[in-house]
Length: 333
Image 1 (cartoon, rainbow, N blue to C red):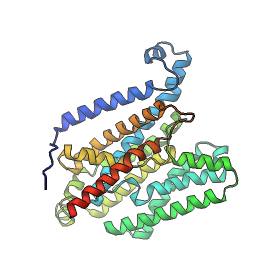
Image 2: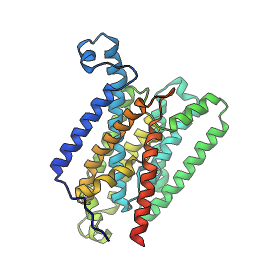
Image 3: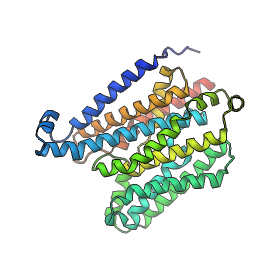
Image 4: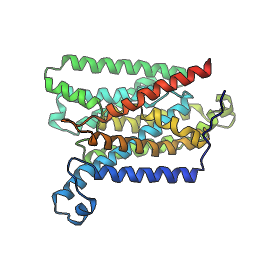
């Protein structure tokens, strides 16, 4: 077997590089669009149309990209560390499916036409319902394999519910809205969306980042983690609730954006010495960079209708997922 040629990088320099890339991606996100103008013009002329586009359209879009990307990267790293499964991602426990079902229910009932902010609220409620079902199915003392099976069941239920609503909805335009929303996008979002999900996202981040050392102990085995004083039940609760809070809120606002939580941890894991605790923060920064760069790409592709962000991440992630499966197969053989 060939040795891994990727060397561990100093945490300081890794964060410096990722922080620089994030700053460049954020500035690029607020600078790129159909209407070309300089940031200097928008900042120096606050009463101009350029200033309106910057502050009311591009800045909230960039902030949401940062929040959602960091959430998906962080949750992916936490899930892979907790489940000790390199193919795990944020939706494996049913949180993403539950949030999507809650948002689609808002479309289906017509509540979105009465109060547009019901869309993210419905998604957040759907994420919490999925967590309740997870514990009802798996039990409070469930093991990792039972949690995964319960998550699969919740995802199946959520998919069935979403398909049923798509089948029963009478308005064809509503069907299009649901389908396009499910593809994932940061377009047409405002500061209202940012402020709505911010408390949930920050709370979820705190719960996931808190368990960095616990995840490193768990990587040595459950018995070792227990001998070091790690409560597996408390760890499981914090990971599941933390993911539900931040991932559910992100999906509720931006739709389903796949593969970010799978790709980013794998790319950065060798650089942190395969340590799950160090991987959490690095994956958060890397996820934000990936989402912001992907969102810039969808705006630069010439088309009559802007490409959906989830389509771009899926085009990037699907080949990477197949590559991971092929590599794992070679290790087994």
